[in-house]
Image (cartoon, rainbow, N blue to C red; front, top):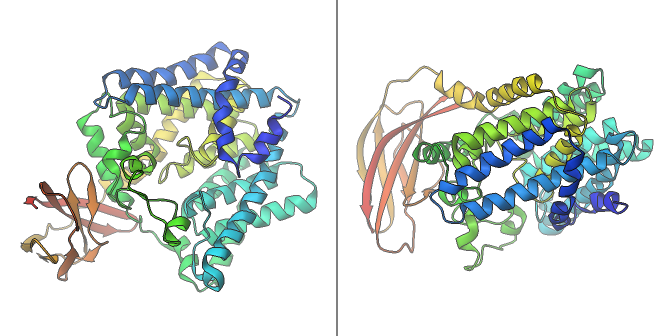
Length: 479
């Protein structure tokens, strides 16, 4: 217990320390019966579907996730009972984040040199999106915790700088919503919103492609992942395919069969052959509700929503805990910030959730906030579903030679975007996207083993934030 603050400070740079979390399972006995019942419902929502999931590894992987998550909650409970002011127990985390920011700045400079100003800020074991979220977290800690004022200023400004340089729109969404949540309790959320406004103002004054990302509404390919994850859920609505196994169905949809962190890929490091079969372990649906539905079916989705609602209800009234939890939930609409294990990012959500549960659980508020989380995570799909349909285009011709590049042309494709996907068990995007009113020439995969494949041509209509997909053609292709 005495070493817990030191572990919390070191974990951002040494994430494997979080694997010790199951040692804290015994601290769950300090929780109220309602809190234990909530955790039990969550555990059953993962374990029971795994018994009948189609993948053989579903049950052991589900058991591993449950033990790890409950251990992290136990760490939060242990932190809560250390002092009369529990939120101050998160103070060491700010020191760890400061070293994380410094390592990201150093690693990016060593990787890109003078060209670093034209690149998104990266880290050896964080994506730019995840790094931006960690920047937003540093801002919230600086606003709420009683650090010495020079360190508080440094942590807040560096956190904002990391968010700006990583160009993470998900991190900005988390900071805005988390800061707004603090306003409910006359907390310091206004300071967090002020710093978010400062970051956006700085982005608007910088004439770089990186800073312009904050003002772009495209989904960066998420629509393909959402569509594929929904297809998996539709095929296995009651059981899903199992925790961590969903990635095998998603890999290849956005980044290929196997990918490493962007900084490593930028330095020419790619997945070795022995790692490629495991590439799906870090492929996610980029929406927490779809992730839960694809992994554990309808029971997994309901269990996750109840747990999130319970965390939020228990954190209600405590500015820092509620703001941090709300930031995670907000980013869960377009990313998976609390999927675990992670580079000590998702772990913080369950740790903070454990601190919140130690305050007590209110069932009506839990149900209400679970419903609010479901609505928030469903907003992209509700928006897509309510957009008026545009006149359907027609496929004029399609050519898929054995070698070289394929081509197609759409009649009436004005206003549409075209994506071409090569599918077998998973799907791989060929190229990126093309305007529907032009000739589409797409590259074909190379070095594929002989077999039967499916070619999908996906048209999507542009409308504000929406990309409303339509299947136009699916053809069997033999290689």
